[in-house]
Image (cartoon, rainbow over all chains, first blue to last red; front, side, top):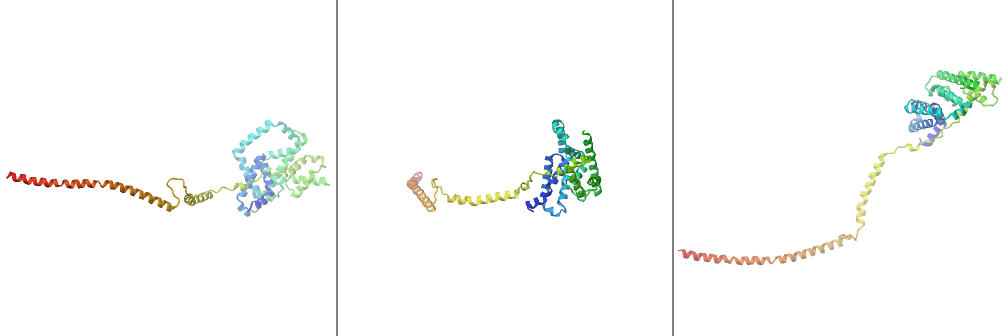
Length: 169
Length: 165
């Protein structure tokens, strides 16, 4: 397999991999590294790509596992502490701007969801995969995906109505 | 009528029962300007979803640099260099003859002539040396003549013997 053939396979979904990684890891840089790592892993095992039934779904699962590993590792935990300190102390202005911007509120609300619901929202509402694909990617039951999705959507709606109605928080 | 439809879809949407097509309809509706006031709070959600689809991965992939360097080929190259070196060094030494160095000759014949000349000179001087040593023979002759003195002693011995009796 040449480099071009590989890129032709990978190009259509590399952005999706990146967005999923960013949804889980939050930081853009971390997500870029994760995407690069996942794609390079695919490239190293390019001989086996023909054997995969669905390269895209396979890469999404890889991304999910890779990001979970990252989050579990100590390195990521250290980074988290630094990151939150930075956000809280040094950027009050940016925070205020964000408060006014209701679209970025959605991002914050999604960020507060449990990891699984975050992934499902990402895969369904942003990437628009169908339920079968999502259940394969996350190795979950089809109905479990629906339930988690419904819960996530309701939480987002509730919090949005709250902020919308009172303009607080 | 449209609004009614949207409200139904929203309910289905929250239960996770909408199809992808129906979700498209919802997204389309909420990105337009004339959203019903009581549904206004859904707007940021759907605009966020659509906006987030645009985010792209811009970092480039270093696919080429991932080729690992093969150290086997390094040793092959080293062996080749050594072989070439061994093959070429003697030839270059005989080809470049240094005329100005004392005692070296480029033509074998010239060298042979020179050597035989030197050897002839050595033997010449050697012969001169041996000819002077020949005078030692004279000494031998002298000692040989001295042997006659023994004869005298013999004869005197005989004389003294006759005197005793």
